[in-house]
Image 1 (cartoon, helix red, strand yellow):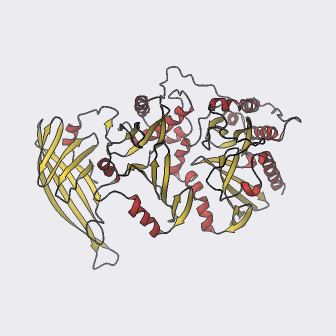
Image 2: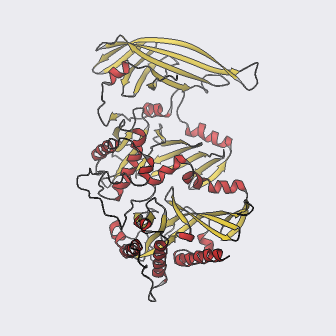
Image 3: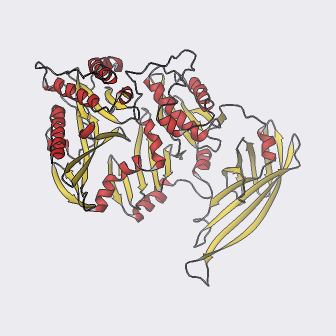
Length: 611
């Protein structure tokens, strides 16, 4: 009981500390807050955001907070008694900050823990005001501050028995808190975001657990200040994002991309002399920086990256450069130096974007320019981004038993706007996110959206082939290949797989495999051999629920000639050209009466048969 009362007291103190930052509890705990942002007003009635056009000037408003924070950490490191920062002359806002700082440092277990405490700046709501975030070396959040009336304001604090706060995607936070009353343990999770000078709580849910009987007593949700029981499925849906972000192995490493750059008050700064500069001041500089990043590591170790081991490989002109560096570092860990670029106007505003892409035309990052400064639109380390004939950008994410398909508009103003996304969760449920709201949809509804609108390429092409076929995007390698691509291509067998479920006319599905080899090569001529294997499935008449495969093979041979560096072929109803890359081969069909090879760009990988 004593432990429970202490936990309850700490929790009440925390609520009183941040009470000045929110409306009533009912408003703060509303889970159906409208996505439309409203101007937050100060005590004199003037609008708070935007507060200042100079982020550096805003950061200086936090200087006193950081000074007090460092003073407390230094005392903790030296094993001294922590100084009391509160005084009778403080107002509620100042007292809340002082009590939070004291509690955060007091909760540090030892001197080493204090040395790994840091802070950073990040504009969480995009209103031009960077928030001050106190956090650990591993990006666990301890406090969040914003600026209101030109003064620091504490929005949230989570430390010791006051809870645990972590970064979530889309500039949000997860906060978890626990209380214990005898053998009854209650855990509550808050999903929240900064909006002006408030913290908005989008969802609050939790579980009451009997530690003695080892069973869940109740799952609950708090909405509009009212607590109601919920079933296990509803709890799972509310908790799905938290679980995926912090429990599934494939998600953990992206946590490095969510927090700001961390500054450690008690650690000596690593000298920047002699370090390469992570330069993002121009498109040419970005290309050079990517190559420098991709070649700086013998082997990428994800756990070391998350803990900051690679933070001192480059010097950073500002925090934005540090953020872009980490995104390109994570991208290069998947893609390596085998990447190219194009500078092309994607959104019709009259100026080119920088597109980083692979040889197969999978888009990996997009930069645009705002006021003459390159700005990262987005990067896609593990996802597949592709273009359609309407100029919209599709992002396919397939990771850890989840599928997500997101459609974006890239507007002339430079906004990367989500039109909608379809999520197939690990539990099999389908969700549609549109106009800032997420709702569960049926299996049939998800298929209808996917096939009738999202999937805008036709068989036998895949999304990357569609990108090349319908857009003006071109591929130029960032670095020269180590060997002549043509020489390497002649020694390989090339392969392309295509699904033909829709166009084959077969009820049980069909697909094709195409193989390409070259022979009799001279400087200006060679022969190309194409082997086309068509396979379809049909029910096994002797075994229920079993399918049999039937394959047919066909062949085509043509002569390829080289003129002005272009390798062209013509004959047997087809006309086109080959482009030879380091790891990819393109066969571009310009004219074709052969249904096996429709007009468009066909991409081939190196064929590596399984043993």
